[in-house]
Image (cartoon, rainbow, N blue to C red; front, side):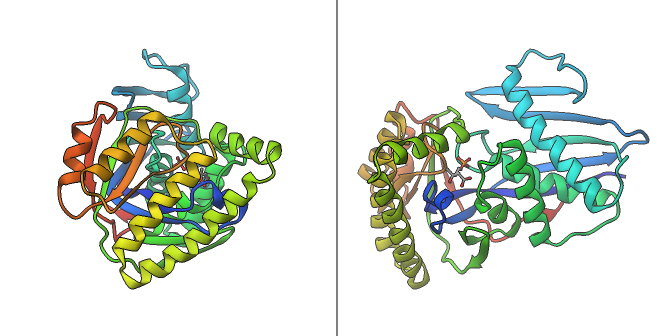
Length: 328
Ligand code: PMV
């Protein structure tokens, strides 16, 4: 048998980094999905092929058992990171289905660039656990899936993970995450535009950098709590469908993330290009350092301005994905 699931990537409307310190965050799922296809093997091995996991304009084509040394010419850390998530996702599926000896062929096909703040790893993990459990004849609901996917990220990222990405990818739509408290919230169909600089970042390193800043300069903690206040204000604007205020708050959020040292020249250039192109607001999304920005613009000015910006490798409009994980 063969089973395929898909799950969406996400952008942060507000609240990344501060969410690590217990403040709320609002990520939104976007219509860029990771598809994972699994078929059960008759031994206990795991064989993974992952075409089109693009990073730095580079395509990973890995095909090999995870317990063998990769025999392809791709940077080891990329293969290791991607395969670490798949290994742990399969482990969760084995546990959920009470099938410790199950082996799989796994094929990953993702439209979400890796390590770019767009939730690629969460989408692969959520879709992977869903496909592998269904392949074993077990159905787990989206909340349990989100929880198991969070355990995977927590494990692979050495404890540096919030529930935001995995919950958002499993449930779809806009969500609110504050500590262990995760809820779906209503949102209008926001006119997201994404700019991607073609690079990837190390989320763990960036999270650690904010921690170090807070330790050295106590007042950086005030910046983190200001982000929390902004998110609460943003939730009200979201409920009212007040896109103008959402945009202004995104601009403030970007400034506060800059103050925490997680922006980058490429991200700032893309943020300004989007604003100059007519976006009502723009900010970096995810851990920062490089990767992606998200803007709100219901015309095509921001997307055009981004595509003319040398630091922007790819600009695209991203619809809110109402549906989270789904069987394909
Ligand atoms: O860049 P991403 O998609 O890994 O997002 C990281 C978001 C942080 O708030 C910085 C960390 C987290 O786990 O919430």
